Length: 333
Image 1 (tube, rainbow, N blue to C red):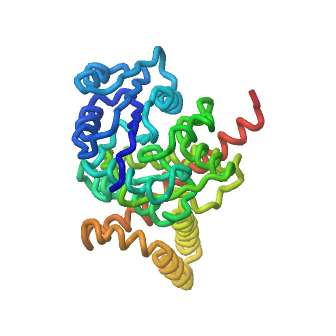
Image 2: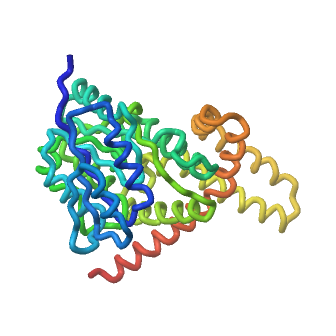
């Protein structure tokens, strides 16, 4: 029989009163018994603290807004568990998540950093929420034995290892601190793995506009980080090879359509068709994931959004990231 390790669930919260209740309710509904919950409130301006105080968790309130990295580091320093499980204040832990974590550690050993992922179906069932949840789930689990990074919405790490490696970077970009931390650990010699069974259900509350904004924000900062890290073309989680091929295919298609319109050459239709076939083949496993989640109608709509519309905000973010990187390089602090 596998003994129950003491697991510290560390949650960073900032103005998430609307979701932290559900997050903590799910955490304390776990069938696993040997755990603690630490919530670090990053100086929220809503009523998050009042909501958190209704649960039997350890609450730490930062005196000023300092960012998720600082909040997570403070929570980790206050943890008493052998293992830290980082998740977000808009994520719902499933009843068996902690049990699966404990079992996984028994197989991998404490020196391995373990990642989980989102459930394919999010908490809120709209199209853009489901699209994002399936996309992230697929992207994070397709290289489960050798992922490029472990995301903080479901990161499992030995407490000693986390503290010895100085935690998340606090003077960094607004996001991607988990990517930097994962890369730093890999360079030190630690192994990263994903267990797709370790799942949290995310609350997205996405509309079309929020989906676009999210794509711009992530691609912007990812571009800035990747240029500096010299791995812009790496197959890295949601910044996957498939997504990059999809964006390039979209760009080439737009270019060919413009040329076709200007030059009135029907021969340009054939390369457009070939590009579409090539892109569809490269993204076939993602298309399958869309289909397996909600059937052929959803898969068709999701693939249309992914191939025809989603690349535009990604390209916008990439351009912004390149400009921001060049301006920062040209004007060092």
